[in-house]
Image 1 (cartoon, rainbow, N blue to C red):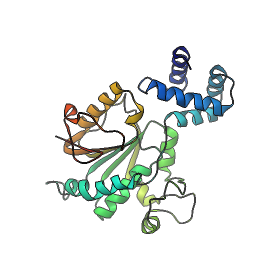
Image 2: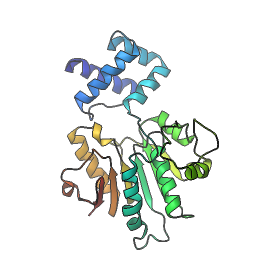
Image 3: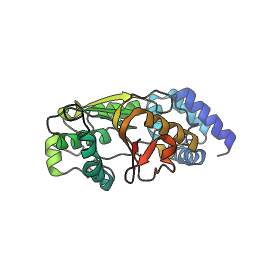
Image 4: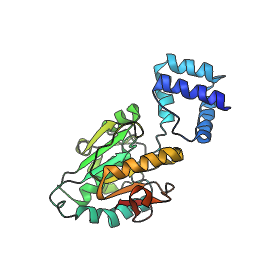
Length: 263
């Protein structure tokens, strides 16, 4: 795919789907697009984009693919254990927070596995206490699935213990659904990380395996926005391959692999 064709595709995607591909790394996105066209069976992008324009099911499939929804409960268990054992105790015991709820945000929450994981963890760490947990994503289809509590595949719940499954999930499966009590603990909303303003004063922001797809310029923008959305002492939890090279440039300080605290 040459640059001229890619520019044409980007323009069409923005017009038809409302998704701006400029913040994404060119070569990475080109490979994803080439792979998708091959799978679609269409002979050219002009033919495929006409199909996307005219067919709602195809628009949904293409949009879901572009927003990169890969997720599971407690993904990368070692990092979640570190969050539970080393980060959350300090956030929970902050003066003034003992009798108040924490503010937690799952940015790029996809179909909800991450914010549901956060809700399960907080219920286990602070039984009976209500926290504000927000899950946001650009993909409306993914958010609809999250609000419904599933369905989730066996692979997506493979890190859920039998006790957690009996406590937080409906009986039966696969596919699996979380119960209504867990759904009620989370506020889901559509949000464009690049274009929209963020809420403020979060104790914890979890944004994992999202920023990796963006250009350096977009990463810089997002890290600054995340920092500004944290309260002093709040923590940003990123993916294992999303190391921030100079966190001090954003008013952040490393506090363990994948974790950065607002200074």
